[in-house]
Amino acid sequence: MRLVAEDGKSFTSKMVIGAGGTGCPVARKWTIRRENESIIQAAESETKLGAEILKKLTPHYGTTELFPEDDFYGYAWYVTKGDWVNIGIGRFNHRTHNLNTHLDSFMNKLRGLGRLDGIENKMTPFGRHAYKLYDEIPRQKSGDRFLLVGDSAGFASKWAGEGIKPAVQTGLFAAQTADLALKSGDFSAAFLNRYTDLCESRYGKQRNTLMGSLLSYIPERLTRKIVRQICVRDTLRKKLIFEAAFGFETTSL
Image (cartoon, rainbow, N blue to C red; front, side):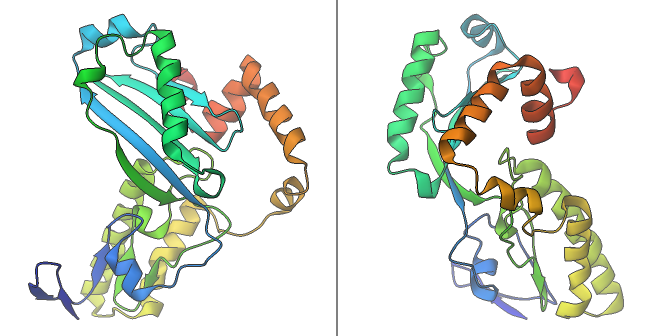
C-alpha cells in the first residue's frame, strides 16, 4: 500500500490505521458515509489559569458542571480540573442554525453565575470540531488493509458525546488487531473484521431497537417534559443522566 501525505511525501505500508477525527482522510478515501448521519457540532475552550483562581470562580471546583440546552438538543459544560478550565457547548447539527447564538447565551449564563469573573481576556479562543455519535447509523470501521479508530469511525458515546475514552479503547483494539495481522501476514478485510467484532463486543451493535423505535413516536413536547422532570429530580438525574448516560461513577458524584 502506497500512501501520499499532504506535503507530498509518500510512504509504503502493509496497512494503515485512520485516527484523523470525523474528517479522517483514510475514512474519506475508503469508506462511504450515509447521508442521514446525525453530526454534533461543538465549540470548546481550554485554558490554564491556576487552581486558586478557579476555586474562587466556582463552588464546584474539580467537578463537571453540565448545562442542558432548553430544547435538549445539546448541552454545555464548565469543567475545572487542576489548573485548567474547559468550557464548551455541543449540539445536533440538524437542530442548530447558528452555534454562536447558543454559545453566546451560555457565556451570558456563566457571567451571571460569576464563573468568568476576571478571566475572559485570558481564555483560549474557542475552537470548533464535529463528531458523530455511536448511534443506530454505523460507519465502516475496517476494510482491506485499514482500520478506523475513535471519531474517524463515529465512536463518541451516544448520549454524552464522550470521545476520549472510546478513542483510547478502540486504539488498543486496533493495535491488537494490527499485531495479529502482521504476525499472520493477512491484511484482508475479512481478517481485519475481527477489529469490528471487538468494538461491537465492547460497545454493542449499531441498530434500531424496539425501545428506540417506540421513543421516536413520542411527541417532542412530551419528550422535553419527561427530560425536564428527570433533570430536576436528584435520584433520576443521578441514575439516568450521570451514571447511565455519562458513565460517571457513583463515588464521583
